[in-house]
Image 1 (cartoon, rainbow, N blue to C red):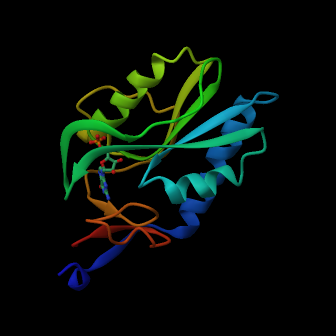
Image 2 (cartoon, helix red, strand yellow; image 1 turned 60 degrees about the vertical axis):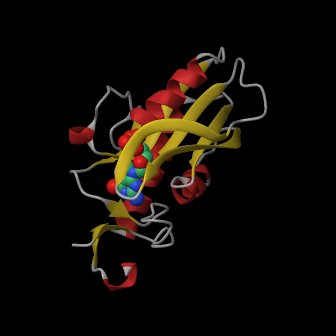
Length: 174
Ligand code: 5GP
C-alpha cells in the first residue's frame, strides 16, 4: 500500500518558490522584448509550469505536450507522443518546461522533434536534474535543482499517479 510509506521533505515549498522565481527572472531577462511559447511537458510539469508562468513578464503563450516514457520507478527508455502542439511553431521562441531529467531519453526525444520545426530558438527549463543518471547529454538552459539519484515525488511528480498534490518535493519510501 502506497499510503503506509514514509515521505521525507527533500526540497521545501519555500526553496521551490524561491528557485522558480529566480528561473522566471532569468527567462524574463533573456527574452526582453520578445515573445515566447512555453511548452509544458505533461503530466509532471503542470504545477511547476503553472507557478513559473505567473512570474513571466514577457508575452507568453502556453502549450502542452504529453509523452509516454515512464512506468513505476524505472524509465522504460521508449518514448512516444500522447499529445503534441497543434499550432505552427515556425519562427517561435520555444522553452520546454520539464519536471525532471533523469536518463535524459524523454527530453532528448522531444528536443529532436522540436528541432525539426524551424523554430527561432529552443531552450530547456527543468526543475530537477539527476546528473548522475544521464544516459545522453542534455543541455538544460534553466535548471532548478541538480539532485542526487533518488526517486522523488510531489510538486507535480507522482508515484503511480499519487502524491502530485504535495506542495514540496519529497523522497518516497525512505
Ligand atoms: P528520463 O527519460 O529522463 O529518464 O525520464 C523523464 C521522466 O521520468 C520524467 O519526466 C518523469 O516523469 C519520470 N521520472 C524520472 N525520475 C523521476 C523521479 O525521481 N520521480 C518521479 N516521480 N518521476 C521521475
